[in-house]
Image (cartoon, rainbow, N blue to C red; front, top):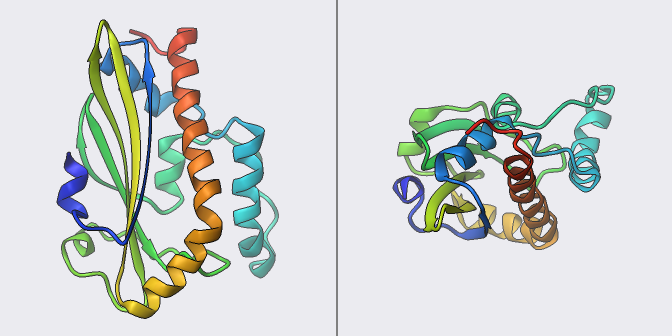
Length: 188
């Protein structure tokens, strides 16, 4: 997996997968066109996460928009690697445990260097693997690596609270892709 090249030994990891009755190419295309955040649960959880930043910056809530892989990239995740119709790897760095998220501007080159002290780095992939009989396994994995022991402690406390909700969001995203493929919203 491409993901292994960026973070073979993470401090934390979360994996989710499901099977979809479609060919890998159709599932992969659906990743880029599906509204991954259409669920009221996803909208509420992402809204809660954004609330501290909106309060600090005195910003108004953004108009409701679709959550696609492109909007994830626009929000601070960068494209690290891609093998079309097989795997996409995104990355982000920052101090995730802070209420406002404190994401660092994406710098592709930094992912080939050690994680700086006081920060953490996350890599997130989507992979599609044929499972036979025209079916595909769609998976997503998130891996996190901290730059030092103090960051690791802060991250682990944060992850203790956030992990179940983060996992739920990813499960709902995978199901949204399956629904989009099943409904024919993705051209084959």
